[in-house]
Each structure stands twice: as C-alpha cells, then as structure tokens.
Image (tube, rainbow, N blue to C red; front, top):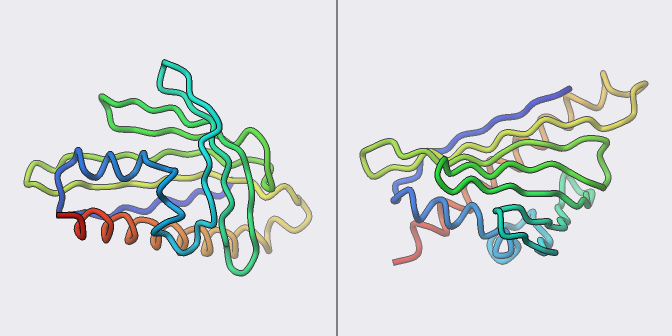
Length: 148
C-alpha cells in the first residue's frame, strides 16, 4: 500500500501546534483544499468521528473517519470507516523540538481499491496526497504564526 509522510518544523509552542492540528472543524476556514470537516460525535475517551470533503487534483474525495486523540503523546490517529478510498489510515503528530519549535508530522497509508490500475494510479495519488498534505501543513503554520 502507498505511504506518504510529510513533516514541517513550525516556530510555535507545541501546545499551539497541537491545538491547530486537532481542531479539524476549523480546517475548511483556512485550508483551500479542504471543503468541509464536520465532527459527527465524540466519546469521553478521546475518540471522535468526523466527515471530510477534500479537493484533490480537481476531484472531491469524501470519507468518514474515526479519530483517536492521545493528548499526552500529541498523536491523533485516524482510520477511514467509509468513503471513496478502500483504505485511508494514518496520524498527525506534534513533537516538541526543545527550542520553541514544533515538528508537525502527517503520515498516511492508503489504498485506492482498483487493483488493475494500482501501478498507474498509486504514484499519481501519492504525489497528489503529498502536495495536499504539504499545503495543509503550511496552512497550519500560517494559522499559528498569524495568531498573536
């Protein structure tokens, strides 16, 4: 299965970066490729369900995922429960570098679900997901550093 991972150091306290990463419902307001994210429900154990609509290379991808937040480790794991791809799982992680900078990582593994076209589609999808992920990280950086 294809895997994409992107990282971005952001000059901001780790608490600010973590808050921006976990506030999914704000993404559409400042990420041009995210059309909507709706938190559908949350339990008391840091697990929530969210519905996504994202523009990827001119196509709209939609899915519902389960997000599990580990506040102590600052990791938000996600796994698609239904949607356009066969599989879409990964995590966001925010690490404290110790110098006032946060290292934000986005990692995803996916499966398109068209075995006969996988060799052709997977590289294209990987590139598009990498570009989309980099845009999302840059948007988070702008969001954090623009807030006084």
